[in-house]
Length: 340
Figure 1 (cartoon, rainbow, N blue to C red):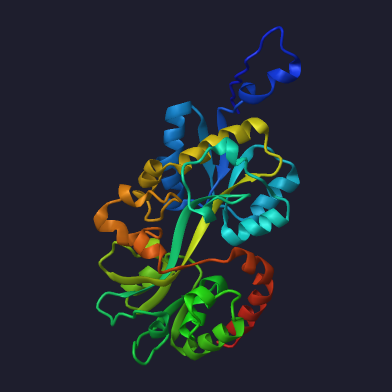
Figure 2 (spheres, rainbow, N blue to C red):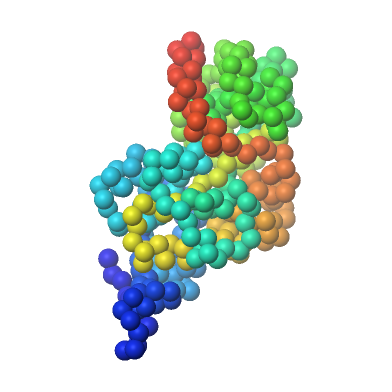
């Protein structure tokens, strides 16, 4: 790995002063592990390219990311990978396992950010939403109660094979208000899923499945990630009652100080609304700036998770609740799947 060291030294300064403050070494290249696909491309266009243009610092991307991979990196004692992408609940787990370090926000010097994106252990760089969608021409549900009403809204469903992408919507369909979802009434949510399970023809594992099944008319209604369907006239969709979540970047435990210094410069670039607008041009997920709406195309604001009209009608994932209860819920999920 090539690095250039910047040291301001004078003969009269003690050695300890040479390594402090602005004189500290800064890497010219760092490595990150991200989730891949269009999301990774948006990081390149929106943040890495502007960083390199301003500072000469290069960021090498690798994918995919997983908690197991992060754990293996830390336990092996490696120090070459500095940044690691984590979902909100995974970040909580990584923190508890001691796999990531606190972020020095004074070093990041971020522009204005939504508060949930500025975490002690993670920089929330990208919002994404899980929403309801349907094949164009179908009767359009306005709520999760209607989505789960297969008599009034007939058609096959395609739902996620992941409890954290499913149970919050089932609870809403059972009558729980969006601002009272957590702590989640798991038994109530499973009761609602049992009512609809005969109409679910596919439980998806890969995000590409729901839109393809809609296009093939194998199903008529789906729960899916918004970025998979927005802007395509083949689909209808509704953000109401959707689940907003964040992908974070954390600093890998035991990263070198000079690598962290470069990583904080990248995080600064991630906080700038003009860079977030570039990233949103690659994928219809958005960054954490409250000022971003003004930089996005007015006729496409309805597509983005953090636009004022969409952020206001969604609930935000409670990562701490899932970290504390996820194992028990997953066991119930597996038992539920056996009943299908």
